[in-house]
Length: 94
Image (tube, one colour):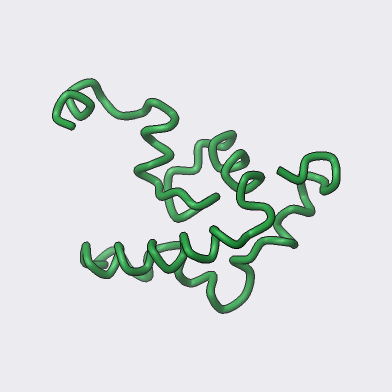
């Protein structure tokens, strides 16, 4: 994390997802097929891998409980699991 080097509002200015590639971080439509979602999320996560503020982004997403899109190299489902938001029935079926 950049921590004190970058203020909370400035980390976004340094994010690798800014620009045309930002379209990969959220679904294009509610009709997105599973294979399309996986491909889009994989492309977004590759961008996150090289991002200098990836940890700041993930910390922010967890703090505000952002459950949609790719943030800090994680999907909404991955963050729900990190936050413990899955029901016990879902955990048991894993």
